[in-house]
Every structure is written in C-alpha cells, then in structure tokens.
Image (cartoon, rainbow, N blue to C red; front, top):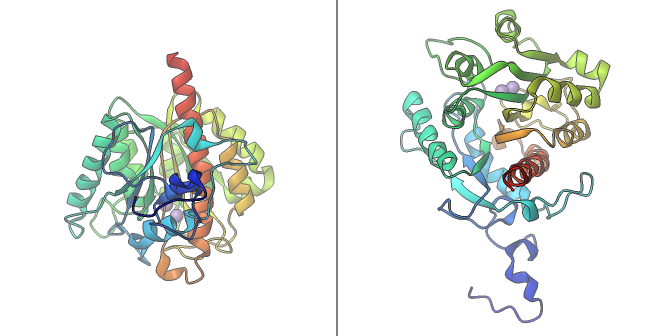
Length: 325
Ligand code: MN
Ligand code: MN
C-alpha cells in the first residue's frame, strides 16, 4: 500500500474506506485471480452474444460493480453479515477470447466455472445475458442435477431460435435436456408477458417445473411464494438465477426485454431473504444492460439484489461448515 494511513488504522480494510475511493470491485472486496482461501467468488461475465433483441448486457458487470461500492457489510433486515460468515473476493471477469463464436464462448465460460467449482468456491456471477447460466450449470451440476429458484419475466425454456440451440431464451430447456437441472426441484417466479410462447410455458410445466405467474404472485404474495420455493427446491443442492427483467421496469428499465407488471424491489428483497437455509451451490444475476440504463437505476437495483443473494449464499456456506463440524 502506497497510501500511508495515519489516523484510522481500520482503513487498512478496503471495505472500510470512503466508498467513492479505490478500484470498484464488487462490494469493494479484494480483487484476486486465485481461488485459494475463498468461500464465495464474485464473477463478472461480460458476454451478450445470446441476446435475441436489445443488447448491451456485456457492460453489466462493470456497472453493477460500480453500484455495489455503495453497499456496506451488514444486512439490517436479515441480520446477516456475509463477510463475517464467508471469505468473499472478486475473481474478476470470465472474459472471452472468442466472443463471436457462441458455442465456443459458452465452453470458455464453462471452463472458468469448472475451476471455481473444483476449488470448492461458490460462484456468484453477474451477466451478461441469460445464456451464461447454461455453462455455469454445466460446471456446477457435474455430480448430478440441481434444483433452482429462477426469478424472471420469462421461462427461458424456449427451443431453437433462428437455427441456434443456444440463446438467452433457452438455457433452462437445454439444462433439463442435459440432466443439469431436476425440473421437479425448479420453481420459476414472476413469469408474464407475450414473449412467453405457449410452447415455452408448456415445456416448463410438462417437465415438472413449478411456474408461478405474475398473476399468482400478486394474488398470493411474496411470503407465500417464498414458502412455495422452499417446498419445491427442498433440501438438496440448488442454484439461484435472477434475471433483472423479473423486476418491474419501474425498478429496472435497463434490460433487453422489459415486461411491465413485474415484481417490486421490496418484494424481491424479502423473497430472497426468505430463501436463507436453502443449500445453494451458486447464483447469478443477469440481463443488466447499461446502454438502456442512463440513470443507473437498474444497476443499483441489481447491486441491492446481489447483496441479498450474497447473504443467502453466505448462510449456505455457514450451514455446510456447521454440518462438517
Ligand atoms: Mn427475462
Ligand atoms: Mn431470462
């Protein structure tokens, strides 16, 4: 450290320095390129080659990193202090050497997460478009299919589109076909809008997924939906995938396929908090598109949700540590 700290020795910890200072890593955690001595790795995936409509999500990780610098170390609502429960660092980006070769790009992303998973580190990723969840699941579900809490306006269980099997509307159909997801332990929350073609919705329900439409969400409320998620996912390993377009565009206008009539921020925050105790093996937050986010509001909403997700991942780390004792 070149800066000579004279008055406040606590500021040796970058998280305790003024929040406008320093390099904008996720939550001002140490930026590292090694997996040693780590429980949770924050990862950016600057890739939007799977987008079918408005692009720009490749710029998501940098914008969300910037907004996470506002967030401190304690969650007063859930009383979780994630950085005390788990060793957390920013692993940088799963950047791509071949961003214009879709299947090669997905393979590259998988190889990054293969290493993270092999080191016993839980990945918490920021996209990128939703196609990136497939290679992450390929890395995390090697020992067998996992469950999933999926919050999104869209089922993302579509089939081929314009000749490609891989795009941001299809990752979870491919994941079921590849045996990465146990559809009976998958819940999709917030589904709405005309992009959800009946055949897509049909694949989700026919495969055994629990689909909670936005209508059901508003009728029964976030607390009931959280209980339903815990019931569906059960006690086995599970993944959490949050597409920022699951939020109402009032809170997240900067995304590729916004759908009006969505989840509010406070509903999303309380829903995620109620998922504490699920055995999460990783999570992602995707589809933040800064070019459509001039005010930065979407990135700020995403950063806020990322902290809530980090808290439930830290609880999963702590739970696994307690079971080993
Ligand atoms: Mn979506
Ligand atoms: Mn999606």
